[in-house]
Length: 253
Image (cartoon, one colour):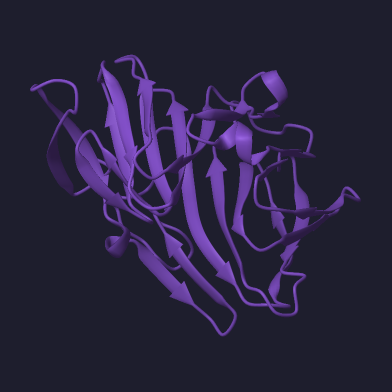
């Protein structure tokens, strides 16, 4: 099992009970330096937990806050699909392919590390911290040609719906992931309801990036993660905070 605790959540629309696996925010790993505060959903760097090594092809969800004017210097990656989603502030990217860009809230950045790439991530603001999720997924094959991609989504596109932001084909304005994975983002308003249909032939990970929401009647807080596998039916969400940010992964079983 990927998570230690299993809770039964009663659905909003039916009296049947479903089994979801909760990864509470306060049980994640944490590393802090003078300029970085990072929470690790799965084992990462010096944080190791044998029951939290990943989920399907998902290997890393790091919830990072980087101080103004600080960041990660040039460092290498290989054979990983790396996604960054900025929640607040701005993040500056540079890499050994010559790419350089600023990532804003509403953007999604994807880097195929493939056969090898160097990159840096830096907070260009002198006054404001940057808060972002860094996500790693296993690619469908090794040795891919490295490349960088970044797409922007408007608040209207992300509002009160699961907006696709990454897909295997890069369809409908999404970034391309070299894996049988789709990533959705939803910014749900208080008292709004959003649903997502499940298939028992797929696995799903839902990450509460910020705010709070009810999932099938159970309250989730910022940083909580939920794993779902082998289920039909649907995820039914209701916003609690003014605006809550949710990331959903549709993954191989």
